[in-house]
Image: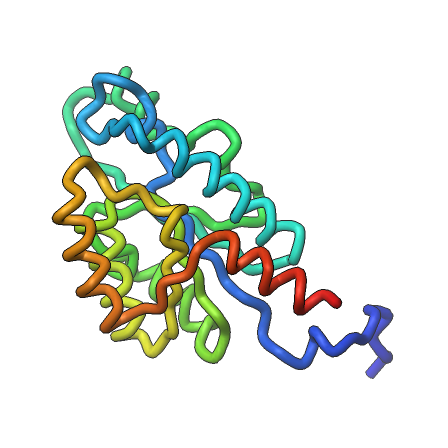
Length: 189
C-alpha cells in the first residue's frame, strides 16, 4: 500500500459535515407561482451564503428536488429548475422525489447513510411540510439534523411557521447562518 499524498490535518479526524439542499427551485422565487413568497429573496441570499461556505469547507452536499409528473412539461420545467446561484455542481448528487420527505427517495436515503456520526445541515424551502418531513426522516435514519433557520423559506403564515419550528425542536437543532459561519471560522483557527 502506498502512503497517501493528501495533507494530514486534525480535520481528517472528524467526519466532514453534510448539507441537504431542499427544493432550491425557481418556483419559490418567481412572482405569480404558487410557491412564491416575497420574503423568499432573503432566504435565497442566505442559502447562497451557506452553500458557498459548505463548498469552501469541502462539505458533502446533496440536493433533493420535487418532481411532479404532469401532462405538460413546458414551461413547468422552467419553474422546477434550480435557482440561479444555487445550481448543483457536478460533484453534488441531485435526487428527485414525489413525496414530502427527501428520505422517501431510496437513493437519497442510501446516500445519507454515510452521514451517520457527522453534522447534517438543512437549507431550502417549504418549512411546514417538506422540511418537517425530511427532519423526521433524518431522525428515523439515525442522523442528527440542524435546520439553518434563516436559510429556510417558511411561507406566508407566520403562526404556522412558529408552530412548525416548535415541533422541529423535538427532531432537529435550530441554528442561524451567522452562528454556523462563526462556528466554521472558529474551527478553522
